[in-house]
Length: 537
Image (cartoon, rainbow, N blue to C red):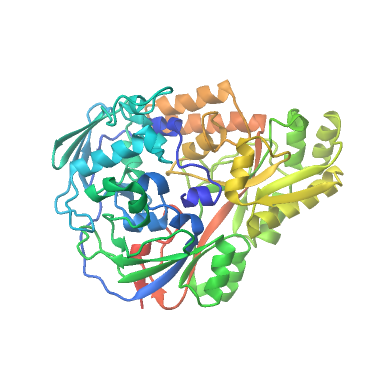
C-alpha cells in the first residue's frame, strides 16, 4: 500500500484516469533526464515511514512509496526538483500515433544481483502483474495495454498469461500496443508497478516479496521483512547505473501514522520523519531550520454517504458544508499549514486554482435555512474518520460547528484504522459523513477529480454516479490540447460539486523534519523523502 492509500488517497489510478492521460501532453517522445552517475559519500541515517510501506516490496503488490522508489527504477521517473517526468531506464519512448510505442532501454543497467535489465525483464514483470490469477493489487494499471481483457476474463480462467500488446523486439527494445491513444504513456510508466523483475522473482513471488532484488539505488538487506517486523535496512547498490544514493545504509522504521513517527523523531529514534496537521506547527517552532515543507497535491474533504436516505436531499448536504468554518479550522488547528478551499483541485496541479463549489463557504444563516427547508435533522449523527490525530482533531472541530450552527446536539465521532474505514465505506456500513484525505496520483487535477467522482473509481466512496459528470470528464480524456483538457476538468469538477456528494475542506501542507545529522532532504511528488538524495553530514 502506497502513501496514497495510507493517507486515504485510495488506489493510485483508475482505468479512466489512465485513458485520460491523452488530454495533458501531446508530445510523442520522452527525453532523457539526468541519470549521470556520480561519486557518492557514505554514512547511515534512519527514516520513519507508514507501516504500509513495509507490507509489500513486489512492485505489483506494493505500489509507489518513497521506499519503493529507492528499491526500484522504472522506465521513467518524476524529477523531484521540477515535478516533470523524465527518462530513467528508458533511453527513448516514441510513437507516431500515441497508440503504438517503441521503448528503447539504456544499456548497462543491472538488477542488484548483477543480472542485466532487459526488455524481457519489463515484459515478464508486466505480464505477471496484469495476469488476473496472480491477484496483484495494481493489476488494473495495465488495462490500457492490448490483451489485458484476455488475462482478466469476467468468467473462467485466462486463456493466456501474456499481454498481446507487449512484444520484445530485442534485448533493449520493447514494443507496446495500447487499446486507446495515450499521449502521456511515458508518465504512466513512472509508477513503481511498471518496474522490471529479475528471473529470481518468478521462482516464488511470496519469498521475493519479503526480500526483493530490485534495480534501484538501494537494496533490501537480508533477511528482508518478516511478518510483524517494524524495520528494514537498505544498502546502497554501488553498481546502480543512475545517480547513486548518497548514504551507504538507511534504516527504515515503520510507524502507524505521522504523529507517532514525529514523536519518535523528537526522541532521537529517527533522523527523518513526515509531519502533518498540527504537528507542522510544533516542528516549525522547534525545528524551523530542519523543516522542509511543500503544498501537497491533495484535498481533505467531508464525504456524504449517499446510500443513507438522510443525505438524499442535496439541501442537507449543502447545509452541512455551509456550516463548516474552514478558515477557523486552518488557522486555529493547522496553524496556517493548509489552505481553506472551495475546490478539490489545488493550485499546484494542472486545472487547479479556481472556485468550483457554491456551497463551500461559511454561511450559518443559509445553512440553517436549507436544513429547515429539507425538513430539519432528526435523531443522532455519527461522524467518521481514520485513526489519525490530525483528522480526528479537525473532525472534532467540525462536530462542534455542526452542533452550534445547525442545532444537531446528539453527535458522536468514530475513528477506525484506515483499511477498516475503507472497507466499511465500500460495504455501505458508514452511517454518517466522513473526513478523508485524497491525493493526486500524477501531476494533474484530472487525477483527483476522477478518483473522487468517477463511478468506476475505487476511491469514490460516497457512491456518487453522474452521467453528466462522466460526459465532461470523458471530454477531458479526448481533448486535443492541454488548455482544452483543463477547461473540461474544471467543468467536470464544478458539475460534481454542484451535486455536493462531498464538501472539500482544505488543501494540506506536507512536511519533513530532519536531524542535524543529515542534509539535502527533499520532498518528492508522493510527499515522501527522496531517500537517495539525503546526505549524512
